[in-house]
Length: 400
Image (cartoon, rainbow, N blue to C red; front, side, top):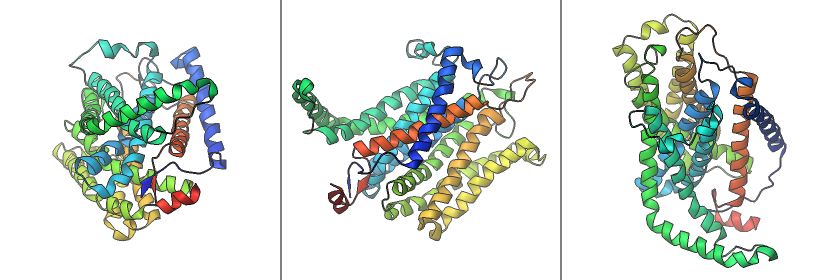
């Protein structure tokens, strides 16, 4: 199998729905930048963050973990048979982190100060470490994507007459980049894996320092470890989820020979995460808060229930050999980690003297859904331009 651009029409009924959702989000986004963050959100001086941080940033960073887990499997561990999933996972991670950075830019009240951490360093700040690592890792992801650009356009640069004089310089630049990147790419791959482990865990550190503002069910000294383990646990399910959706959307046969083996690795990873999670609950004796059966405990129960269900499903060979089974099991893991981040950043985090329980506004929900729609549209466009998805050689020739 070789990677090649997907030959398929871009506009479909589903794409039109995504465009409408994206446009709706862009309208509210424009209102946010014109009239201020308070005009479209339910945030205030007491509640400093909400849906955009809990979902767009914290959950977005976790769900983009497929990039570093697949890179570690395919390149660092040299499992050659899994390299066909690395490019789609890299693209998902690159787009995911791009929208995470944009979500941070959107959520900051004075968004025009987002450049401050670049020159105003604070080595004692967990949030500074997260910010710097995310920025560096995003840069690394774009560098890792450059070989796909050179592969696509080397020898094929053909600008119109007015700009024809640029054809040769651009081609020479692409060839130079291709030769240099082939020598140094291993450095960026290792850097990407290391940087990911750093900021995934540091998001947990950020919530530890919230102290008693965090509900005891989630406030634990091992929160950085739990954040890292949950990100690793959702990495492969996210790769499977993306691969199955892309296969169905572009009417291609799913790569079950790879996805099934990938699914077989997931239960042990989830099991390690659940062991630490349950052990922590019993060591700190916080199970008493679960037995209250209020809205908070039910959120914790739902989060754990999703992960347990996925754990048992991935143990079944019948499930891992079925596209539908893999899709359902992977969706449960994604939903469980998504709910975990919502619980940590929104449900469990309650500022002192908060007179009003936070709930996201229509504007916040619209912007979040709009960003997700834009991400899907961007993914669709990129795989139709660049050699991201691998296919059989005969299928590529058939579509030429």
